[in-house]
Image (cartoon, rainbow, N blue to C red):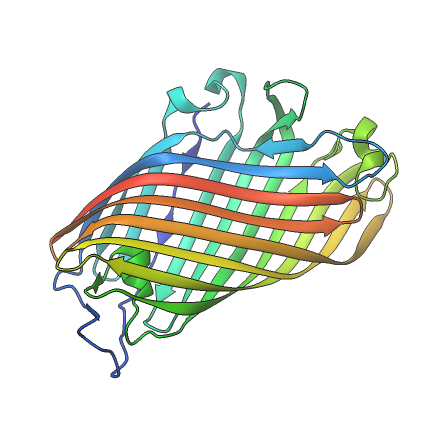
Length: 319
C-alpha cells in the first residue's frame, strides 16, 4: 500500500543573542527556500517478553514503511512540508492492506532554545511475529495515536548553531559543538476492540495472565542530555554534523482489559542519534541525513519499544 504523510510546520525567525561570535556562524541573506528530498523510513513498535522460563518470540507492529519523496517550502514566517510514499517500495502492496498514517510537526527555534511539537495517527498496523517467517499480517483493527513536544536547551550558542547543524538555515563557518538538554513530554495510545497481544501469547506479556488487553495508554516524561557538533572542513562549506541524546524518564500507564483497568508508573529509557553531512552556502545546500530514535518502556513482563529510522538525501536553494 501507499502510505501518505503530510507535515505542517511553522518556524519563526531565529534570534541570536548579542554575545554571538560572528566568526563561528552567521545569518543567511536569503530567508526563503525550497528543499527537495527523497529517502526511506521505518517505524517499529515491538513487544518483547521478559519471561525467563521460556523464550517467547517478539511481536512486531509497524506502519507500511516505504521510500518517500517530498518538498519543504519556507516563505516568510511559514514553512510547509509535504511528502508521499512511493507505492512500489511499501512493505505490503496497497491492494493487500488498508493501513494508513498521518503526522504533523510544529517548530520554533532561537539560538539557545527550541521546541518541536508533534502528533500522529495510524489506522491499522502490520504485524509480524519473530521466528514465524517474514510475512506481515494486516491488523486493521488497531489504532495508534501519539502527541508531544521536544524542548531543547542549547549551550555554547554563541559559537555553535544547532539550526545550522540540524536544518542548514544558518551557516556554520568554524567548527564548534555544544551540550544540549532535551525534555520530552508525550502521550501514546494503542487500542483495539480485540486484543493488542494475541490472546494465546498474552500470558507471557504484561501481567503474566491470559487476558485481553484492549488499550495501552502511556503519559511519559523523558530527559535526554546530549551533545551536538558541527565539523566544518577548513576553507570549505563542506560539513559533518552529528548529534546524540540518551536518557531516561517515567511513564504513567493505563492497561485496559475487558472488564478492569491496571494503572501505575514505570521506567522508560531512550536515545536519539542524527548525523547530517553535505554542503551548505548562502545560495544552496545538499545533504545526506541519517536518524534513529528509540524509546523503551518497562511494563511488567513486557518491554514495549518504539524505534524510528530514516535516511534521506536533500537539496535546497534559497531565494
